[in-house]
View 1 (tube, rainbow, N blue to C red):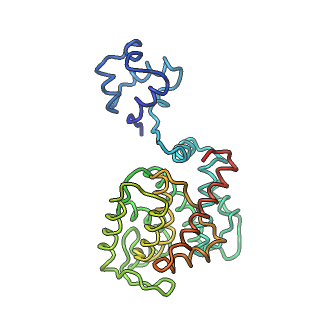
View 2: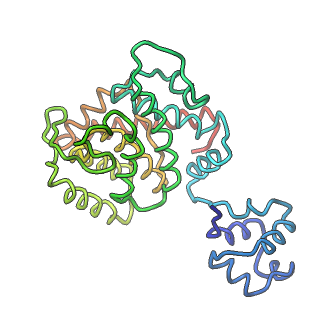
Length: 302
């Protein structure tokens, strides 16, 4: 879908002022449309593109102030192999699913992403494969809506993307894309009762979205409290980590890749969050270091 919102800013960066737009035959009325991000005729776009020597659809790409998000969107759209989008998909999907017990190796995860096939292996569950593919699509969704305010609708859609068509979706009491219907206990901790989940989630999001400035510490706190509520029957960890990715991209914070080898530290941090916040904070900062290593590998500034 074409976005006109950032067009005038792009034209300014290219050295096209309102005066120069007038000089190439663009009317003041059309310039006003450009300024407001309104739809332009193909003829007008082509005229500007001809002057700049580029394709007109390039003019209307959605541009983000977050260069990491911009790279992810451009590489996703172009289907570029071996870049940041490619590696984030594989590394985050492998680690996030492995934390939750998936038996797929990183090489198998890579093969599914790159070729949509998998070599045969003993003991591999169909759901492991489905949830791997679904996690790729969930990351795509996060990249697409990264700059939107976090809502319950977005969170429920992430759960639906991850869990639809899995074995869980065949259970009459398992609410795919909706909050849990049965109480659950995680790591010995009582979570929010099903009847209390909507109110708990509304309060959590209201307090979080009410912040004028969001830091990595705020995103970590959001994740911890989300996991304490545990709003879904299953899939809370993966949804929670996808929320972290979305909010880091939204607020121009370096994303985190929590590696499977740090699972014990991650679970300890969650378990002790309300008594000691340092352990979970350190785990997420280590996750940022993992993302920085990926940026360095690809020679991307940060």
